[in-house]
Image (cartoon, rainbow, N blue to C red; front, side):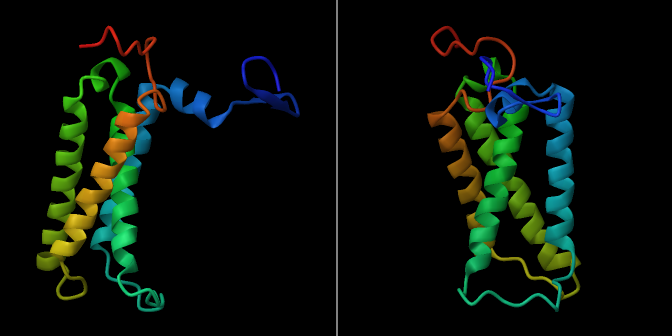
Amino acid sequence: MSGNGGSAVNGVKILPIRTFLQTASAEFRWTVCVVYVAFLTVMSLRPRAPLLPRSPFGQFDKVEHFGAYGVYAALVLWTVPFRARVKWRWFGITVAFCGAYGVVMEILQATLSGGARTGSVADAVANLGGAACAAVVAMKMPRLFVNGGSGDLETAS
């Protein structure tokens, strides 16, 4: 490993994941977020695949909802410049936005799927819980997804 935390494989520099997350361009961050939202929308509204077995753990789909919306909130926070993100209202805005999106997806499942999918209050709560958990983790580890500037927490208002 070199002094800046990277290594080389066949002459190609490999960055550690944290360095990559911190140095990715705004365009790349937004692209990843938009692609993920498209994926989440398709997966939420497509008919359930009949060939996929049901989980033996009962309500495992709540864990899937929690995780999917946790990733969604983390990606949204990753797109917000660090200086703006340390203004704590961004965490609340992210949770509200991701939670509202989850509620809309559940309503669309209940109304547009023709019976192939069902909307669920429990799923919407799991969506909101995942988004909130990701925001709390981001609040406790604010420099994980630093983008732009030094990220000096003391001088940000």
